[in-house]
Amino acid sequence: MADHIGVRMCTFFLLFFFVTPNQCMQCHFGCTCFAATNTVRCDSKDLRAVPLSIPGYARTLIVTGNNIPQIGPDSFPELENVTNICLSNNRITELGSHTFSSMVSLRSLDLSGNPLALIHPEALSIPGGPLLELNLSRALYNSTSLTDLTTAMRWGGLAGLVLLDLSGNRLALLAPAAFSRLPSLRHLLLPHNSLASVRSGAFAGPRRLELLDLSHNAFRAFPAEALGELGRLGKARVRLGGNPYLCSCESRRFAAWLDSSAAPRVEDAEDVRCASPRELRDAPLSGVGARAVGCGVPVRGVPAGEASLQTSYALLGLVLGFVGMVSVLVLYLNRKGMKRWVAETREACRDALAGYHYRYEIDTDPRRGPPSDGDGDITLIGTGGSMRCVYSLCGPARRDSHNPT
Ligand SMILES: *[C@@H]1O[C@H](CO)[C@@H](O)[C@H](O)[C@H]1NC(C)=O
Ligand SMILES: *[C@@H]1O[C@H](CO)[C@@H](O)[C@H](O)[C@H]1NC(C)=O
Ligand SMILES: *[C@@H]1O[C@H](CO)[C@@H](O)[C@H](O)[C@H]1NC(C)=O
Image (cartoon, rainbow, N blue to C red):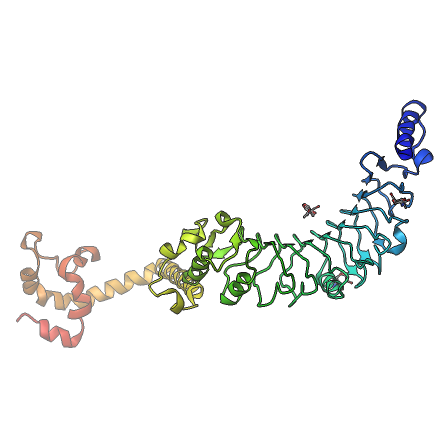
């Protein structure tokens, strides 16, 4: 109540006497302090450190868009009553040991949008384990920080964690049993990463997982092992949309699983769509069983080489096209030689044609008339039976058999 009056007084003074805020209620210069909502905000003030003058009533501390390279246990004043702290987009690279351990009431910590390269194994442990929500969206700078975080999670300081947001971190692989020491975890958010596989036991540990978000990753398929792991989640909701699914015979098992009772509830089933092959792009994967190309075999006996077969067809096409182009080019460049060859062949055929004359008349349509005796254009000769001349009459053995006399 006293604080309330203090704030009103302060506002009054601010408005009429231009008193700086930190003079009347320890609100750091440049920050905004809202006593009514117990909130302190320090947005984009180019601060180099977390302000140390935070009013005692603060429950929510928001420090974003500044330039704070590292934080440690000395970065914060006594903040025993703060429950929510948002430190997003501050360019923080390093979290020291026991950074938040004085915040015994902290329930929600948002470190999203920082390039965290170094996380001390005990950076996130707080006596009593009060932390419920941890947002590390777009906060892991490289694989070192992921290893650090995995270690921190394994050290057990986060046993009370209910929500973990690891979206947008380019994660390609989850360490085995990475979440095994997070028994209370209910919401595990992993969208917008590069995950391509789920190993057996990947989500072991949380006993009551309610939401697992794997959308917008790099999953092309879920083989049996992954489906088994997802099936273990029981009544949890799962998000699987926005992945580049390959719709082949192989994925029919996944499609069948989606519709079966073995699957958890897929929240975004309408976004589970084929990305390839091209003719099935954007088609819902659940309908792929009927439509997948070239699936004559029952689901279980399906060969795994579908994708590579498509690739080799495409390659074959390319090679044939290339060979064709080269042939046309060679023919074009060598057209003089061709002409000479045709002339020579014609020479060679002339005798044979003279003898062949009678038979030719019997073979072809009489209305077309007899061929000129070899002097005409090659295309004239090429219609009807004359092209046979080159291949059958000019061979010595053949000449005998076709000799009409
Ligand atoms: C925290 O809240 C309690 C009770 O509201 C109060 O007595 C105490 O002074 C507060 N702590 C700080 C550091 O202001
Ligand atoms: C985590 O932070 C990101 C970026 O600030 C935000 O978009 C997201 O909603 C937060 N996650 C949760 C669960 O609040
Ligand atoms: C991750 O980044 C930090 C800081 O730049 C660097 O020291 C470390 O070697 C990097 N780790 C890897 C695996 O590249």
